[in-house]
Image (cartoon, rainbow, N blue to C red; front, side):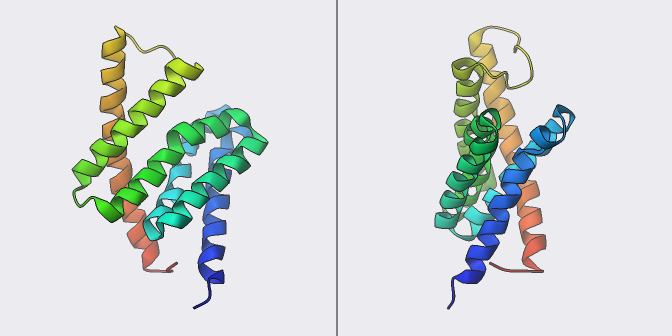
Length: 166
């Protein structure tokens, strides 16, 4: 079997992830929420083939960083791990709740790095309360976000699966 068709799909999905992550750079910051969709192509890649997912994630990080370092860091530490993690977990974890807790915990750690280590405010400004309360807020948000994203991404993946397959 030829590998050109899956590689072409992978290339298209990586390009889509890059474009979605760069929307605020191309248009304006008003479209910042569109960047959340950049995890979806990586999710589809990782769910289809873990190796393609990992390579697609790394390729997208490099390409995004070439255009805008700030967006590259955000994709590396926020959107990319969500897509990659949810896609990989679909191969190994049977319960969606467990997947959401695992990936939500990873996302919480990366958001803590973004917020406190790098200084990019995750929610656009300071989080109220003590540091422990802030970490709890980030963790709860991350788990809920991962669960909702998994539900939506599964639906989109299944819908797309009716029309094409990698």
